[in-house]
Each structure stands twice: as structure tokens, then as C-alpha cells.
Image (cartoon, rainbow, N blue to C red; front, side, top):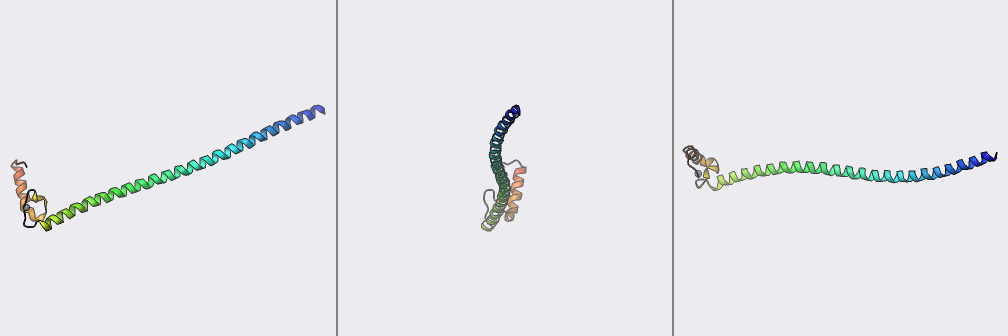
Length: 115
Ligand SMILES: [Zn+2]
């Protein structure tokens, strides 16, 4: 009976120590889970930012290409409007009104003339 009581008290002691350890581990676990959630959120935010940046970059490239195309068209139109009837160095590039100039340029290149 005495031995049984002693054994019981040892078990109680072990249980108390164990439950203290379990509480400590549960607290650590909760802390780690909170940290993990935070990192997961940061990771998700970062991935979204990267995705957004990729979309923005591809849209930006499309707009740059469109801008270059429009600039070329505008230059062509301006040259056509401004230089009709006027000729100059490289005017064969200015548009349809310099078709004859372009033919002359082709002839010049074919005969090996350089600029
Ligand atoms: Zn011309």
C-alpha cells in the first residue's frame, strides 16, 4: 500500500512534468504556426507582386512596340506632308512621293555607290 502510494506520487510528478512540457511545446507550436502563417502570407503577397510585375512588363513591352510603330507612322506621314515636292539626302525614305528617289537609290546601290 505504501509502495503503491509512492508509485502513484511518482506518476503524478511525471504527469505534471509531462503536462508542463506539453504546454510549453504547444505554446512553441502555436508560435511557430503563427510565424509560418506570416511567412506564407508574405510568400503569397510576393508571388502576387511578381505575377503583377510580369503582366505589367509584358503590357509595357506591347505598349512600347505600339509606340514605336505609331512613331514610325507619324514620321512617315509628317515627311509625306512636309516634304512633298522637296527632295534631300535620303529623301527616298520619306514616303510614297519619293518613289522615284527610291528607284534612283536602288540603282545607285546596284552600281556599287556608297554614301
Ligand atoms: Zn525625293
